[in-house]
Length: 73
Image (tube, rainbow, N blue to C red; front, side, top):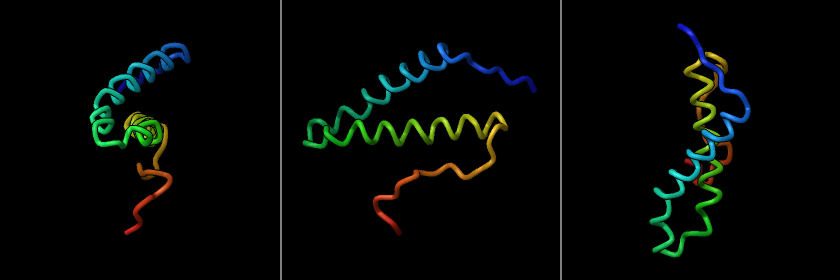
């Protein structure tokens, strides 16, 4: 299996596109007065997305989970 690594500028472009699209999905929460939480949610989603990509490329073998749990079970 060949792993393709992006350069920093390509990564920045890709993560920027990801944030725009994820922001569009989460924009529905603006209708319910929850818009102030979107930025934080995007940050958390970005972190687990990056962790996921590292895991599937074999770079990092650790659980994929949110770093700060708001609703401990």
